[in-house]
Amino acid sequence: MTTPELSVVIPCHNEAENLRPLLAAIHAAVDPAGVDYEVVITDDCSTDDSWSVLQEIAASDPRLRAQRFKFNCGESAASWAGMQAARGRYIATLDADLQNDPKDLPAMMKALPEFDCVCGTRVESRGEGDSWVRIASSRIANWVRNKISGENISDAGCTYRVFKRECISRIKFFNGAHRFLPTLIKLEGFSVTEVPVSNNPRHAGKSHYGVWNRLFKSFRDLLAVRWMKSRRLRYEIADSLNRL
Image 1: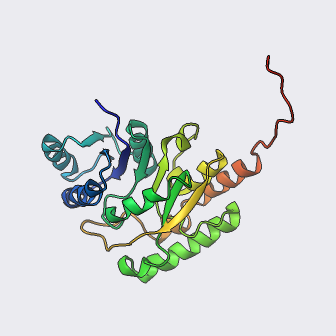
Image 2: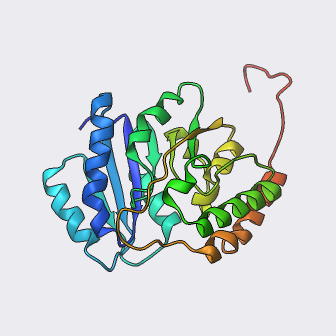
């Protein structure tokens, strides 16, 4: 079995109606680029037909690899489980609701020779797929995150990213860490950049996000990330001997 160049990692919870168009959109975007890839979807114990749909697709699509949690664990766990199962040299993460457009993947990958991690930013496209409530809450959340964490990421809430797999080799993931992955990657000494991406309306199903979990739920995690940054070890080797 050959190792794919790219692993497209997707957490999934009650997205049965989105899965077929999502896989079709990924194939349409990546196939012309000539990239050897796989799609890794983790079903976070959905209560709809998501797992049945994945089984049906996998029966005829060898590039799809899927796994299902025994019980609901949340987006961070589903994202991390997919990253751990991924075999590609590069890993892309995106949502299953088609708001992240797979057609942006080739452009994101083009930035990888210069950077270790490429993050999507929806600053210019938020109005195309979100309500004013979500746009306002996202802007406030981004401002708070950047202010407290000392970051300058324009769209920290966007989990559409492509990065080299070594970026996460030493990261200690935790519940809520998917929101702060660029900062965690920077803490490991890797370079991070942002590129504009599309923001489509949700294709089908119900959004799992609201004002509460965008503005308040991640605040404790944000304080933890700030503490991690403040306690980071910093040193430079002045000289060394061969026998050491």
